[in-house]
Image 1 (cartoon, rainbow, N blue to C red):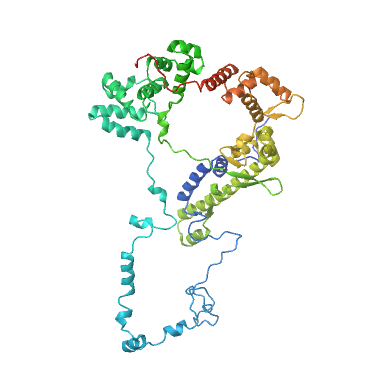
Image 2 (image 1 turned 45 degrees about the horizontal axis):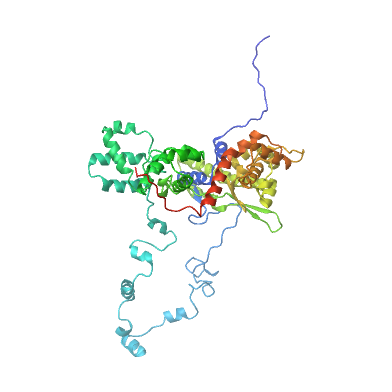
Length: 548
């Protein structure tokens, strides 16, 4: 077989991932906060990109230009070309009224004639220049607005009152202020500040502080002494290394840390298991005292540091609003506040193209024009895609919006993608980090995509979220003397037409942080016992044990 060279024409299709296409795909999965940050960067980088609300109106192709108000000095003259205003008499309030020009051109005569006409000297009428009088009145007048006392404040719309709000006090700054008062030695302050920097938002230190002495080059005794002082700072319980130590610090502050309470604090695992009998033996008290001690523990703060400010939490802003429609349906609309409004400044590009001579500058501005045009189109396509996906979700989950979570239907990405003729990956990107505000609260778009649970009678499948809701309703309605086991829940669900396995019930129950039937029986019986013994329980406990 001979090897030869020849020319062939072939027609094929391929998807080329251009940078613009990759960026458009990335825009779909950005949240509204990330999208705003991205647009801000583009506005700073691209000179041909402007906000829709900035500066004069930019003409957009296909839209009529906005009418500008006609002013007397705008150069609109009559048809005769003589330079006389054609619309002064019929213009706005700035135009001259009939007779004004005649009065201005009239000769008032000499000073003596004016005084005779006014029947008083001119010094009495015009005692000083108007500008000087206005300045003196303004100087003597008291400020009428709070902002005038500031010296450099303004009353325009950009004035931000939040700039005067006091900074939020953080836990670290609060402890640092107490540290400056508690210690005078520089070495102690250095150790104290190092330990304060290790405190987390809840007010706890790491369990192991052995490396603190090595890193600071200080004796372990000095570190322990400084730590003992820090644990007396406000709020009570701060700088503890575990929950038991945190509760013990607060009980010492209340003078309630006696040997019985110490035994209870050291065995919090038994309290979590509701093993009241073992706790009563360890503490050496009766049923009434152990109930009162547990009540005191519950009134303590397990996370004292959360009283102070920490990192700012961003409020969830919905991307889509769903409201009941007048025809009984649902009205879906985008939140315009989360949509960046940008325009391409075609006027600026036209002016630049007339003056630019260098090839490098021309290519740069041409690229800027292409990027700006692409961004405007990508933002518009993103908004349309979100609205299309959200509308299909509302159509598929109409029962949820009308009757509640019990009527949530099974839904997957493929069902929505097939309905709107898009790819599943596109729907997945659109539903990521997007929220919908409804009459039943705000939900992430991915909340409406749930797995299906088969029906026991062969009917329509049930949504996994609806099954979770049903399980929670059964557990909330159970009586203290009739706790439902997982097997009992399975039987009741099958009686309602839900075919589910026991391990699935246990998985859903643990996902909702609902304890087992044994633990629930202990909790509800303990709560029932506390309610029955509350009237007979005295608020003041007297024990023969001495404080530790």
